[in-house]
Amino acid sequence: MASRTKGTRGGGPSPAADVDDEVDDLYKKPLGDFTRARDELAKRLRQAGDKAASDRVKALRRPTAAAWTLNQLARRYPQRMEALLDAGERLREAQRGALAPGGAQELREAGQKHRAIVNELLRAAPALFSEGGYSEKGNPMDRLRDSLLATPTASASDLELLARGRVSGDIEPGDLSDMLGLLRGRPSARPADGETKADRGQKAPRAEAPKKKAREAGDAPEKQRRAAEPREQEAQRAAKEREQAAQRSAKEREQQRSAKEREQQRSAKEREQQRSAKEREQQRSAKEREQQRSAKEREQQRSAKEREQQRSAKEREQKARLKAEEREQKAQLAAERRARKERLATEQREQKAQLAAAEKERDQASREAARAAKEADRLTKEAARMSRAAENAEEAARAARKRAAEAERRAADAQQEAADSAGRLDAAEDRLDRLGR
Image 1: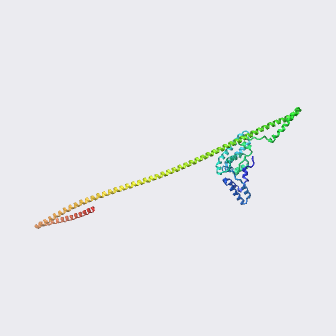
Image 2 (image 1 turned 45 degrees about the horizontal axis):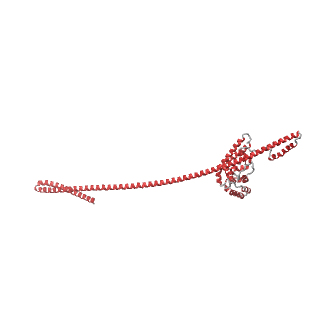
Image 3 (image 1 turned 90 degrees about the vertical axis):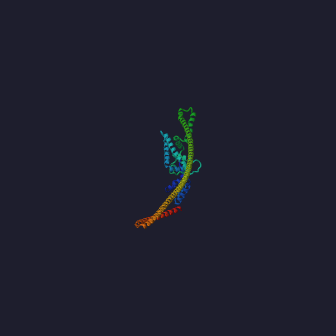
């Protein structure tokens, strides 16, 4: 495995325990605020007299966009990041036991599990890149993917920094053959134990010497031929082994090249899929915004239409109320006119009836007064006649005087009645005069 990566070089030594939380806060801040916050923390530690801690904080490198996103993934999705590290550990164990029965299947399953978690974390990365506002050249998604894929072969210090969310650079893989073997889900092909490149290169001259010596000493004794035969067989075996090793090396290089090409194709395909997914997401977001805008416009139009309808209804209601009030006023005026007309007609009828009654009463009183006057004249004449007759006869005088007294009494009553009739006549004439006026 590689020793210390760029991430650990950037991370620097661990801060003291008393400033550990403040250093954690540095990696939580937005990427653009890291340098300013780091310098402020270092200055504060120096002013507090802790120069060693200040120097350690000052040495912290600003994370790259990919490293900052990796830290945020570790901090915001700690369970998934722990699952990624566990999957990397299982992948390393499966790689070590790949040559055992069933080991290749376990290695493939562990690799698939590890890649699935990597893809799951990568799906959450675009939003973090947008939040971080990266301005670096190239595609930081490739660097982030390479760092996540490198966790099975990364150093323990890199994994510790990743778990704490303090990575400052890319996480680099360990041995390349181990990395390719893990990616392919196969055990890495390694040279045989005890055989190095230098050893294989040195066996050829030693094998050629016995062979040449045997050709020159064709007539040598049988003992020399038997002694040369094992060396020749050893030289042939060594040459065959070298050829097989060369074939294995060529095959391994071809497999590595194919694996690298497949990985590049897969990465390009994943980038294309992510780009397509991002475009689809952007299109979907644009469509949703357009739908929301259209819905908002429809809602505004509907609200305006409702307000217009309410205004029209209110105007219609006001018009109807005004018309109703006008009709009511007209009906009230007509009723008042009818009532006044009827009242005037009734008053006129009453006045006419009263006038007719007064005239009738006046005529009756006038007739009664004339009759009473006539009766009074008659009685007066009768009294005079009786009075003359009384003069003629004394006996008859008493009766006559009696009758005369009676006649006088009736005459007085008649005169009183005539006076009353005259009074009533005067009263009737007064009422007629008032009615006429």
